[in-house]
Image 1 (cartoon, helix red, strand yellow):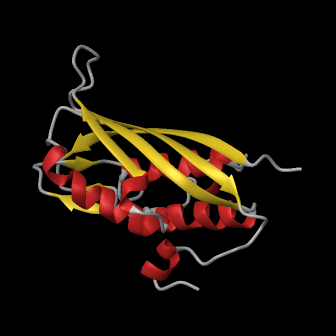
Image 2: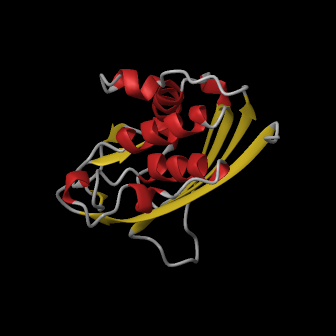
Length: 174
């Protein structure tokens, strides 16, 4: 019998680079640098994706969407999140809540937090008050030119009902 609840943890980091937009939680944020990566560098969506996949014992984001595969070059990270959501629902679970911590020197996340939380909630199909987002500075850990995301998700068993994810609808997928 499947457990009634499952917890997943996700972690991601990216270095800041010039010439790319900064996307966090699917929201473009004004900043002089963006986060480098094979896809769009959205470390928050990457960490949420890994947390969801980990909660159900699925392969991680790098296994499902390897950076060596050119089809994922510059990809919207909502594509990865949507695949994780499909797998969660197929496994018979729904998301209860997501809690995240971002660690970066700049930009300040506070002014953007409501937009990020709202967009993440929409992608996940959960209420905004079920998305936690905190931001910390990397005091003393030597990561001033990088950003780190830590995410925890809680899932509850649904009996196996599969529902189309909000992320899939947002991307126009069936």
